[in-house]
Length: 109
Image (cartoon, rainbow, N blue to C red):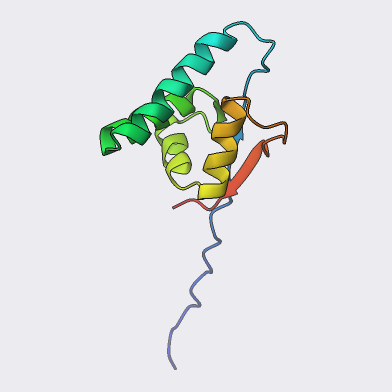
């Protein structure tokens, strides 16, 4: 008789929420946020490099309120689709009245 114990199933990791907290245009610092966002976008367009992309991601991190772990949040930002990235950038630049989904679920890697 074989002594085989069934292998327990490993549950998939729960999705991680990427939560954005983008200040309204009426919040103090509007021009400062606009200026910095525009600088990052212009730098990426004129001299796209890993460094300029990383600087843009670092800038966008300030608008991520969850997860609290900054490296995890950075990885989730890097995993955004083009549409989600564009929506986030438009929301930060206040170019769109379409509200950005405040929660973006991703599976943990």
